[in-house]
Length: 173
Image 1: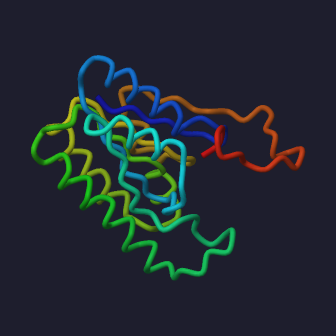
Image 2: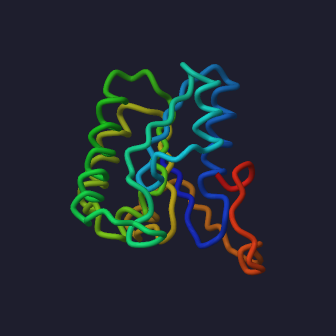
């Protein structure tokens, strides 16, 4: 089953993590590959360390692309996105995981870091290796929306950032 969480509102990664937590409670295993988020410390990564070996997060992204002081080349970001898919392929090859989360993969596609055709071919591969795949990120491509069994769009109604309140470590990352 393919699930896609998209939209401009907050909560896409959080929804995916909630599904992982529920799956772990059923005695199964999950893995998340993060395509954009950089190597900085995050609550979800620290939680995954506590839930190991049943839950694992691998950050392959190099951080936000072209914003917030990003000084990497687009090729470095592209290489990181390709490494994300290769890492996901390697991790799910043995059939250990029941859930695969491709966090911010929609963003990686929209930014031109990884071709949509490459991701779609990977999703074909993954359907025989895991029970569930979740894709997250803004701007989900129509092809992923059409293929998905469940699509949820997070709609931003109001956000603390609009009042100048910055992201906080315990709630936002």
